[in-house]
Image 1 (cartoon, rainbow, N blue to C red):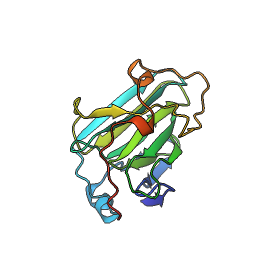
Image 2: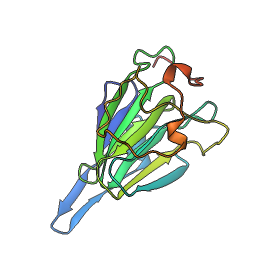
Image 3: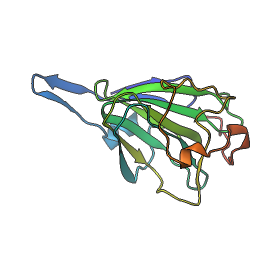
Length: 186
């Protein structure tokens, strides 16, 4: 297993060992002991799965407030996504910064999304299946989002006319969003 640090503090790309031949491939997507040895010690309690049928769909930018903030491990099992994170932790050296990552069925990469980050993705291909682990259950009372097109963030999405849910068209800008995250300075 290979862990790659990113420009956002505490965000990591996870590459598991992939064994392939003419039949296909095999990988251990999650092995608790291996992840713990790599410093990923969260207790994941639920797996989620979404299907996006068209390219150009943006889902995000979502987060849950404390005490129900979620850490996630995200991967694309079919197709490809441009996965974006925004650091919302007040006091963090990377507060208000974003970074995007390609996750696909071909690169087998996973992304560790720590609590305190807004998360979203844009489908690059059609029929994209995204699966992700979370360490907190969904809590409608704590569910929030920030605008995918916040001009202060200037996220460079790979689409000019995104397909959005009604909910995702109504999120506030980062500077107006409800936010109770504080960087713990690790």
